[in-house]
Image 1 (tube, rainbow, N blue to C red):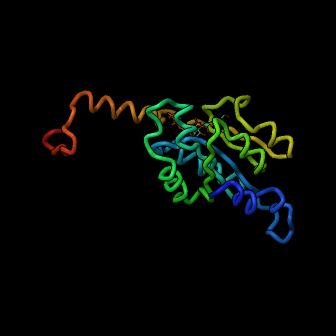
Image 2: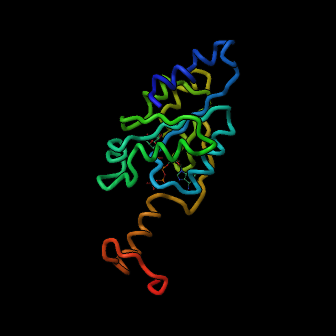
Image 3: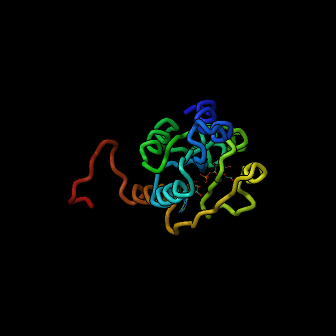
Length: 175
Ligand SMILES: Nc1ncnc2c1ncn2[C@@H]1O[C@H](COP(=O)(O)OP(=O)(O)OP(=O)(O)O)[C@@H](O)[C@H]1O
Ligand SMILES: O=P(O)(O)O[C@@H]1O[C@H]([C@H](O)CO)[C@@H](O)[C@H](O)[C@@H]1O
């Protein structure tokens, strides 16, 4: 979804308009969401439970590369957005190209801004803007043992031990 559409549908003006089903709490979270894992899924489900609508700000491929290096993301932005959009807990996905979601958050002004516990509270971008508009910021519990980097490392280690020819599927006997 384009930011402009998200603002039209879920922006503060829309929420303050009695004819638009006022009282809908808009929750926002953001991330790269490259190779989803249970930490992502649980965090998104918990985020959605904090309001009525969950909008996810998704870093574009260019933004992910700036943050996590030239080998990332593994999954292109359109497919990351498709995967997130398929989750019942996610109502809209807005891709942003900047290094941080500050612009998106400033324009959407969600009622609740959420980040996982891997981010210290004072480093959550958008905190000031959301709180100044009367919203709140929630840091969700981190689920230990899950990260996209760890998944990628496990894959790299596996291939390092038993490299396979391109296109060759391992038989059960190989494993
Ligand atoms: N294990 C986890 N438990 C709870 N939340 C998580 C966990 N891992 C990531 N998140 C949250 O998911 C969102 C997206 O994070 P991100 O895509 O960077 O995942 P990641 O697994 O940390 O990736 P990477 O290892 O590439 O940094 C962020 O809000 C982050 O706080
Ligand atoms: O997937 P990540 O690395 O958890 O997401 C990043 O979060 C940053 C965070 O919101 C800073 O408070 C954000 O600035 C960055 O663009 C990524 O979304």
